[in-house]
Length: 327
Image 1 (tube, rainbow, N blue to C red):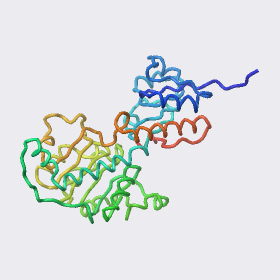
Image 2 (cartoon, rainbow, N blue to C red):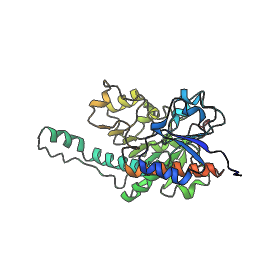
Image 3 (cartoon, helix red, strand yellow):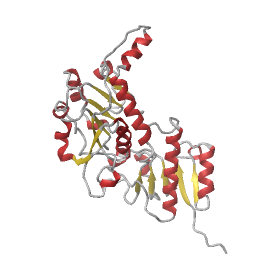
Image 4 (cartoon, rainbow, N blue to C red):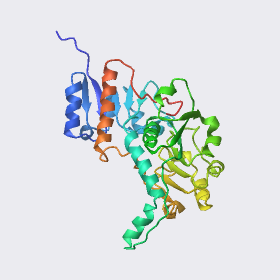
């Protein structure tokens, strides 16, 4: 007589290719019954014990058996802001999959801004040979990184190759941070943000979206920065009030900005940011996931599979989102 536990139902919402499906089945089929994207019905969520992907709030309200949601995103503010996120359900994210590629985005766009490449791209379209000799370099700059998680750490690590001085700001500082944050020359909490902004040549935002970080870089703080400072935001658009940023840029209070995230997305077509030569903006693609980059995609699936193994073995999951804290 067989004495086997009932298989748990796992709903995998993102589209999986054959290789990923086979990996899930080969590793977990003895303990899991998988419902993949093309087999999903409106009722699939009602029987699932675990979901990999991003269910809507309306789906979560029907998820009677749900115990765990594994996001394929690093950001979790869609869920931390929900008033009805189900109690007793653990939420984990895919932090760790995006740091490398986002750090390349940050450095590449700072270089483009410093070397005037946007003007060169425009001149190329118009077949105009104009030599813009004005340029700057990352080397030796004071870098201020707001947020010392996976993305912040990856940016700090690569910035050290430019012999920069890297300062980190995190919401709260604890003694265990010293070894984890070895690529930062100093790390402070938010109480010294105003002082550090005044010394930075490049300010990079990669903080989560929380009540504490909303509107953190307002007009007063933006205008306290050096006039030759460059501002980068790859965290959450709520960090910087859009109208305050537009005003500061129009007044020449900053050298320029690299923006991948905005208070309102998509960015309205009438926003003055579209027309500003000193602004590089992209439509929230600094950290591409499925269909964007193979290495990132593999990293996401590896995190999902590692956490599924932990879940099945009753071990502590990685990347648990603290709903009350917002990240």
